[in-house]
Image 1 (cartoon, rainbow, N blue to C red):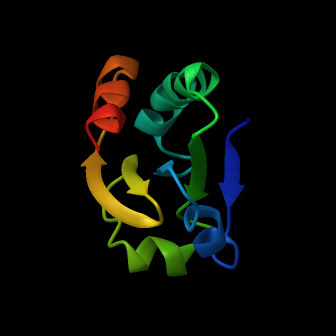
Image 2 (cartoon, helix red, strand yellow; image 1 turned 90 degrees about the vertical axis):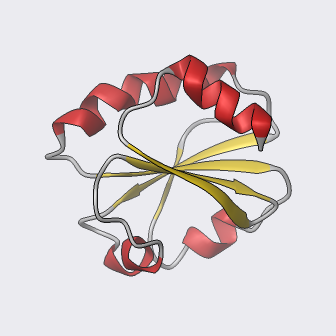
Image 3 (tube, rainbow, N blue to C red; image 1 turned 180 degrees about the vertical axis):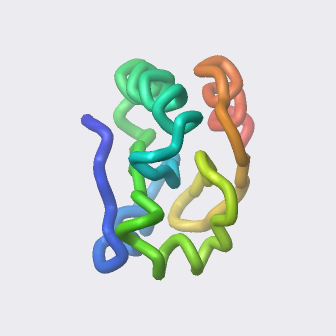
Length: 104
């Protein structure tokens, strides 16, 4: 499964699924977001099919970004069975991301 890109109108249905969804809030102009992107891609490739990775561009999707009070990017939110469980601001290593997902 590849990284999916959500927009305001599709976000809810994309995270309202069984299992774990990792959502990354980002913007094209954000340097740390560009650093984190390959880590997220590698994580997604190694994740099993029960983990979905979704990206949300904060500039293009202000409703969703506001709903989750995204003030700094990159921000990663881990959803389990459609419910947000954990929010992390900043760049994560692949190992840290794997550990967070495994613990939720």
